View 1 (cartoon, rainbow, N blue to C red):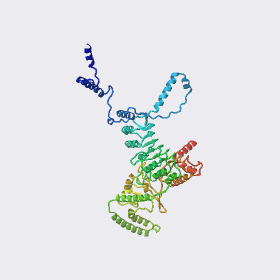
View 2: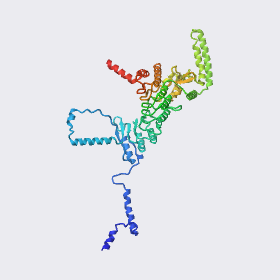
View 3: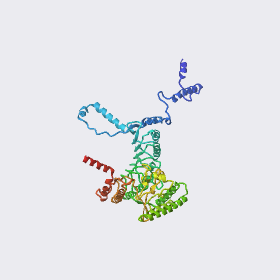
View 4: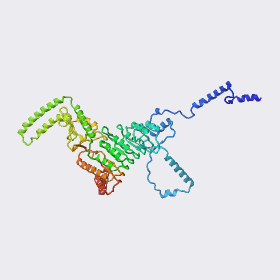
Length: 559
């Protein structure tokens, strides 16, 4: 009996490996493996297989899209999308409220401490703060990410859900651990949102290669860029200055640039000043809390008033003038220029004869009108073949009376060159204090769509040198808390005096007039310094905010 009971009892148990080599045991091992296989393949009850994130169509609600894409990508512990908290008004406890609260209750004190502890931990959890427009979940206006590392996969998820946000205007990243590699991915993300995105803030993200200049590429649409507290030194400032402008390229979209709280010195300030020489789009620049001394301050002040062109810039200016003249001649009517000049000479002779006969019969005090008409006709062919390089007036070589074919177009409407406005940001206006030439409407349409190179601005010739009028587009300059002494103040005083005189002479005409706000406080000079006091006196009536405040105070006083 014992043997009979042992035989069937041993059947469900598998012998140890190597003890029994019968075929029955092998078959039972295979059966057990076959039974275990379906358990690993089948998903648990109530759970679905992970879906492909590429197949998801974003709805435009960032919270839903981001959560769904993270889940599909297998990202379990991901940040939550929350509304950006607003500062609350100061709480003033009332007498009635203080009477109701009983701190002696242990249950109340225990729950309060638990809630406060939980709220503190929730505060430090990674979140994506958003600012909405009119409390609509589909109208995310700004995104704030602060204090947690943004990895490559998070940027990949952003590249899928952020382009669907039709009202996104700004992205703010503060201490998110960016690297040069993730910055490149972030810039690719910005290109996907370029239709609406205009403001980018990268603060507290020092990069080893200091490749922040990639955000200011020629194809960039960023208008406001903040790069505070990134340990940018003179090498980084050189790259940023080259991104502002070079001899052959220029950023035409950036309006404001904040470089505060960095390590920029005199050399870096010189590179930024070089970028301002030919940049005509930047309106707002902050270099506060840096290491700029007098040498860098003088470089910055120099480009804001008439400065001398280098030999390379003069050569490039002549090349641009010749190229512009060639284009204007190619855009003229297809008739032969020799024939036109011949007919013009014949017409000029006929006009001269008729004028001479009329002068014999009229008052002899008007003989100067005849050579004026003749001069315009005879100078036309000469102006088409040679530029007015010596005059420096910056006039178009096609000035004079319009041709016969363009007479009707010129009669419909004429606009002077300083009134041309290619665009709001790209508008680079040229002009001089002399009388501008008036061009036909057909040529104005072409020039209105083009961006005028600053080297084609009117210049002034002094002692064989060529001087540009300087950058009058920059309106705001902040140099707070640097290392500037009275020597650097003298340079800015000369700049402000020149710009004040320039704005008075140009009070009637339109165009940029120079700095409206200049901050030089907290530097290495006394507040009672005469040069600083004079700068403050000259800048006071130019500051639009202070002028508005004075007007409001005057209205309140008389009302």
